[in-house]
Amino acid sequence: MRGWPARINTFLPVFTALGLAAALSGCASDPDKKKEPKKDKEVAALRIHVEQRENGEGGKEVSVLRASPVTFKIEKEPFLDERDLKSAKLEETFTGFAITLRTTLHGRLLLEMNSVSRLGRHLAIVSTWEVGKDKTETRWIAAPQLKAALRDGTLTFVADCTREEAEHIVRGINNVAIKLENQPKPEKPKKDKPSTDDANPDAAKPYQEPR
Image 1: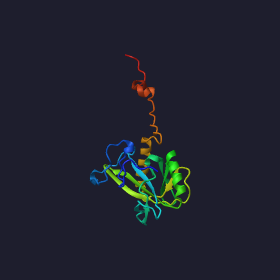
Image 2: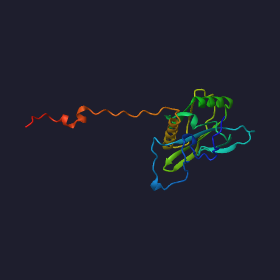
Image 3: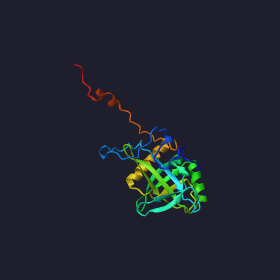
Image 4: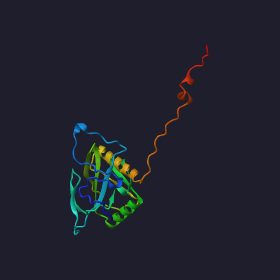
C-alpha cells in the first residue's frame, strides 16, 4: 500500500500528479458567474479506502450514502487513487446508472490483493470533481461490499450522486488518465481536404469566352 504525496485528509484535490501548480478551491462562487468547466479540461480525484477491522487502530469514522447513511471506520490511507485508473464509464442499469472503473496493471494488482485479503469488508469511495469555475464538490459517493475477489481490474458501483455529477466525475477521471498517459489521447477528427472547386472558387464559374 502506498501513501498519497502530501497526506490529504480533507480530500481537496491538490493534483500534484498532473503538475497543476494551484489547488482547486472548494469554496462557493457567485452563482451568476458560475461557468461550467470545459469538458476536455475537467479533472477529478477519486480515492478508495477499505473498512478497518474492529480492533484496528488509527482509522477514522466516515458516513457514506446520504439517504440511508452507513457509518463505519476506515483505514486512513487509500489503497487506490486516480493515478491507478485507466478509464471510467457511466453504465446504464435497471434502476438508473452505475460507474465502472478500469484500473492500470498496478491498480489491478492492488484491487485484487485487497479484495482477496479483505473479503467481506466495505470499500469507502470518495471523489472530488469540478462543478463550475473555481468550485469543486467533495463527497463520499459509495460503500460497496467486497463479496468476491476482483481479479479483472474493474470495479462497478452505484454512486450517491446525480447523473450530471456522475458525468463530471467520469469525464474528470478520464481526462486525468489521459494526462497521466494511462489511456491514449483521443484522435482529433480529421478535416476534409477542400475540393478543387472549393480551393479555387473561379473554377466553379462557367467558362466564358474572352471579349
